[in-house]
Amino acid sequence: MNLKDILAIAGEGTLFKFIAQGKNAVIVENLETGRRYSAGATARVSALDEIAIFTSGEDMPLGKVMDKIWEKENGGETLSHRLPDAELREYFAGVLPDYDRDRVYTSDIKKVLHWYNILHKLNLLVKEEEKFMEPEPGSGSGNETASGEKGASKAAAKGKAKGKAESQAKAKAKTETGSETGEKIRKAQAPKSRKIKPADEK
Image (cartoon, rainbow, N blue to C red):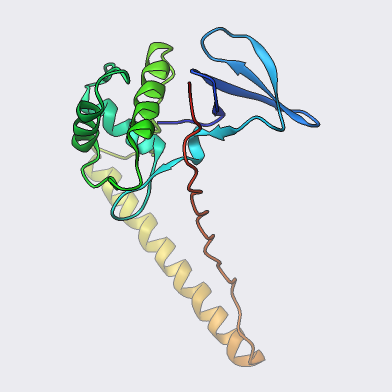
């Protein structure tokens, strides 16, 4: 689920949307009432997209946990967070079998289920779809005619020949100058997810 800009504030039984960063406070909007106010520096604010659930392996982002709940419920509402602790833990084990029983408390499970139901009620559960390129009409992808395939083969052969010529030219330039050419490609280091324990609620 896309949880960007959704916040939880300790002591509040609902969720908020980030609006702006003030000088000494964060401007937030109550998702259920639409009321805006300033959360001061002393307020314990947690961004949902920075929360992860402890597992026996790698910690799982809260958004992915909510994806699993969504799939389990076929897009419907989940259990009430007010059910008995044993029932909640059994349910959560069905959603995330390898969750860490020692570090994930029942209070954490209650918050996850409560937050899920709030977002579900407000139609704010938005799945993060994988981006892919749609073939444009008339681009020749999909069902092609024999002439289209022949043209594509010619274009590919031409491009291959051109690439070979460019490679030979680069190799020659490298030999003559004695210096390496080409660009250095750096892999961007994926940001490490912060392990933030969900904020306490009433």
